[in-house]
Image (cartoon, rainbow, N blue to C red; front, side):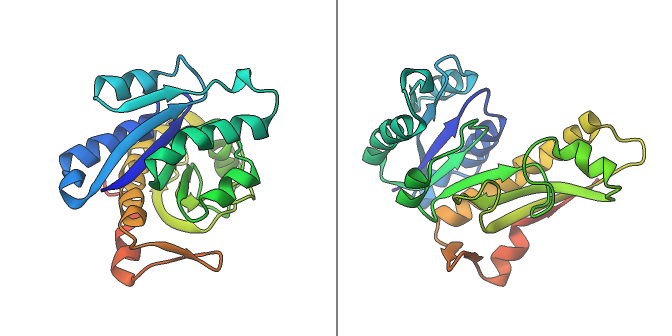
Length: 216
């Protein structure tokens, strides 16, 4: 069985989407399971959701550690027994240290609400509108030591309307984030996508699967 470990800081709507998809598609029958959920915030709603679903769920409170490195080391110690095939950042509001990232290079995934390499960082919806873009999207990528700079695995694309605000654009995009992220998690866990020399390598069929377009 290949284990998936989730890291979150709040509700974890992407975690919920991955869990729904895993249950609907019976990933466990294919040798994949969500093994554990960790949060840096003890009151994170995502932990309660995980426990209600019968998953191992733990808080590692970052406030209890003097340095970012000390927190990451304890988090890594708690994750290691699960031998994760994939570590999924689902609204995890911490920048991981290079030491943590290198320990699981090619196994840590994040989703960013923009079509990288456009608009790394914050306020992506506002910046997209202000730039006059006609499309917007989300990007699932391998986590690297460079913020939002890891190799691109999959993307979802939605139109930008002339009447859009950052809030309406974010609302249009969210369901497509929830479509593309589970697909990417499964593809990496199954070994159909690999990090090779800084690039995400996959066959054409997988590449088509991991490109999700607005369909309404």
